Length: 173
Image 1 (spheres, one colour):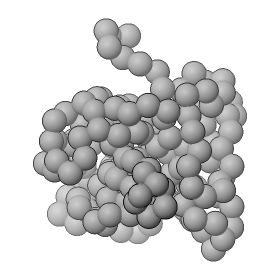
Image 2: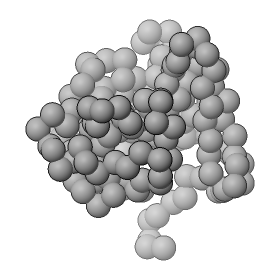
Image 3: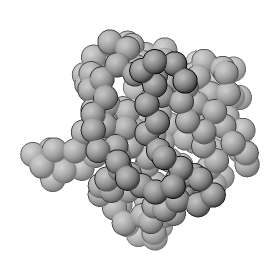
């Protein structure tokens, strides 16, 4: 590993993580974090117990093709904002036909700020039914995302420059 790299997950338990909002069930299975949705409950988030500013984050995701989800970056949960609702940048996981995985959604704030409507190559990067590799570089006011080696996002935005990283399990009905 290069100097400065930190593992956020130890492969064994959820030490270093906090559940916020919702009632999804998070657990470790075969060395991976698994999140299971609970019917008729709000979005759930498993977040790091510390904040990050400038970072490079790499992770792999296998997503049920029936569920939209995402990975929060530079996000917050403050009692004075919507009663502690998690909000902030979300790297989208979108298995739907629109294929916006790797775009940026601003959870519980501004909505879509970087959809993949103009990035056809990026829309083809995510592969349903298999593991997908994500790389997120958040340096200063720039957020760049790659899915399976294909750049999906190049965003310049400075609303939030530091916050936690979180795994979302989207609400389902």
